[in-house]
Image 1 (cartoon, rainbow, N blue to C red):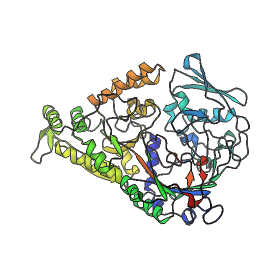
Image 2 (cartoon, rainbow, N blue to C red):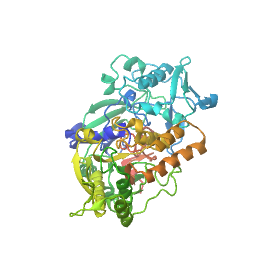
Image 3 (spheres, rainbow, N blue to C red):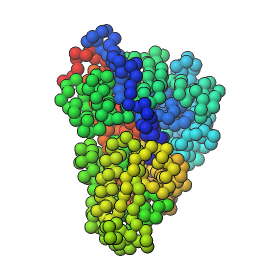
Image 4 (cartoon, one colour):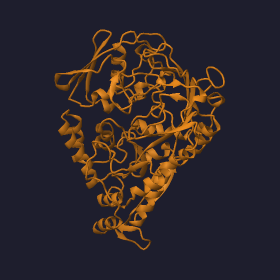
Length: 538
């Protein structure tokens, strides 16, 4: 679970997030030509908002930033395509040098020209230790970045890092604006300027983000002229607003999305994801830090029941950060539900049932708290199911709700129902999740997991571009998680969206844990074409 993804989730606790302003919800999807005309605006309901809109602090690192572009971008099939670069990079020097030729004539939304200096400024600032970017380690391979004239950028790496080109979907910030202010607290963090298809017009914290089309966008002005993201924490409120016509679309859990199945004016979109739910098992807790307890919980949990009952089939069992349908998944690491086996592991490790049924060893009860984010029904349901399964094995798990401000100081010793997941490359998620040196670094390695074999494999996978070597490394990681699971992975979750069927062009990508803002069927809203309201597809 990346620091950015979890911090974004923290925004769900904002007190004003249940209310939409009149500007956000009055007459959403106003028409260009009056009643029955094509909709040139859209309002969608999402659950989270970012901490910052600055690429220098991590916003837009995975693309689809609306306000910004990267050198490259992902298409619908998650394949790289040129964006601010004219072509895919030229790779030389044994995979240590990446050269990008930049588009000419691109401007920022304030009219200033985009040049190679902006790219250099962006990456150098991210790597500066004074910049509060929690994802800096994702660019560990980068040794230097240099401008060659105005339209060429050269990246030099410390080691051949196979997925480096995928890191260059990162949004680019304007040096002429951002360099003149404090990178961590300056106005650019909330009032950014970029080269992207949209310009931010308003950010009412906890309520909405409003955008207007950038008429000078290098790839053509979007036909959706206004786009609003309404921040609505509560699932039921999003569904109600959508049904009332206040929203054109929304991210919804399976049970609420099903309520729109017969609405012929709307379409439900299902996105496959890398988004998992997991329970952290902190090394520094005398119960969760015990390998026998970890192994027992790993097979005591009924993952299939969670998929069927909590997700209503919209997902799959998770045995690690890699989904079972990914080519990177290590076959044979699936764990079957085996309550008898869990009890046997605990018996053999000396955890004996006490008078109340809770196991005890050397005076220590097999009991620990499990925190989940207040107001997150999906996490709550997973936590309750996990506690129920653990109880059957003789482990007492007490579920507790709290804000991230309450939870974060307790993460070293208390378990957390967490989320994470990043598509594209196994390094993107596993390194931040499992590397022992990142324990205690914000929301990275929340379990303080410490496994030397995993550390070595993560470095091996990161420091080579040999496909066979990388495969062996990440297979090792997944098999070590069977032997000593520092997390109990529960489910991978499909993301469901309901959207008015008023436009041609919506689609979905394979999505990360973060969704709704950069992901969703509106990931490519700048390419949509409005249809007349009476021309919805049947």
